[in-house]
Length: 367
Ligand SMILES: NC(=O)c1ccc[n+]([C@@H]2O[C@H](COP(=O)([O-])OP(=O)(O)OC[C@H]3O[C@@H](n4cnc5c(N)ncnc54)[C@H](OP(=O)(O)O)[C@@H]3O)[C@@H](O)[C@H]2O)c1
Image (cartoon, rainbow, N blue to C red; front, side, top):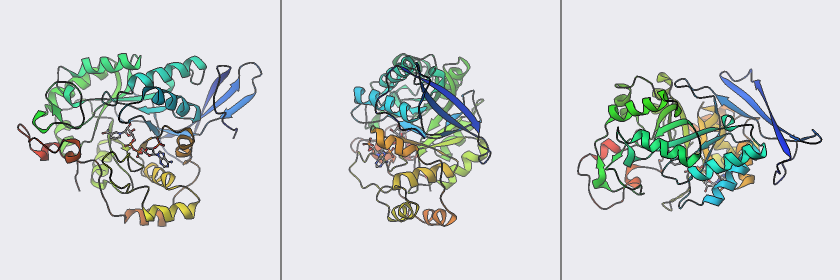
């Protein structure tokens, strides 16, 4: 393994090699080898990231760890630098959303990485974006996706998700949401437009986020193209066994957001990074709690999407593919008390009232 220089100038070119990993069915191992363009000397090899084939849609295989980009408020230059650092250390899977305000920074970073030769072309990265709730109406899906693509400077996203099973009156994007703005979700109309997005090639695959089995039941009743992915909060402290079983039966891949316990925007404790059980396992394995959590997610067959804007931590969070948790570790983790951070009550501001829907229609917690 070569050391990764702190900054890469345009004189390096990347050569990508792919191997099949015999131990892991349905995954590929990819290796990014950088050579000096004049001397052809190898400069560095970034971390090996396996890939997962999605069962629905036409997307290329999804790298098994994604880099999250959400921060509040959005910091464009920091986001751009962080994505470039992420590409340097081996990330090829990036998560954004219309709501985050990071689409433009992500697009600029990928364009710059292509100019510098860090990636051969845009096709080498897997980009997810999401439809915000104010656009969750049949006639607003395609205009919203086209706006995301303009921000990203891209012809297509690899994956386009409905951000929440919540539809709000059309209007400006804001967070938290107003209860009185929630309107009944037109599952059929919105999903038809998502399917159209895939047919037009604007999204290689389509999916959902924060959907419970109840929401998925409603969606699958009308879907002609099944969702490729359900992106939900998932970590050792919120394991969602029922949802995972359901998604596995339908061939819906689950990607795990807030796998490090999230960014504690509400000022709550971090159940993952402060878990004594994970700390004990981390000590025994010579790893960090963050790595144990990410490895646990990966060993469940799920794809963690973790955010860091720090190059060292970005690299550290990818170093989870050359070791394993033991059966005993899994048993201990299965007994961790469960607690979900992101609930509908957190997403909606406390004042106001639901006029058109019940809280139960928009709640994303299920035991
Ligand atoms: N679909 C949805 O509704 C939804 C909801 C939430 C999030 N997401 C997506 O999922 C991504 C990840 O979730 P998240 O941002 O909520 O939380 P997360 O990835 O669980 O945690 C991010 C926090 O952990 C810190 N961190 C990163 N690596 C670390 C390490 N090795 N050790 C200690 N701390 C570390 C980060 O700080 P530094 O940056 O300083 O390293 C950041 O404060 C988001 O960015 C977003 O793309 C989607």
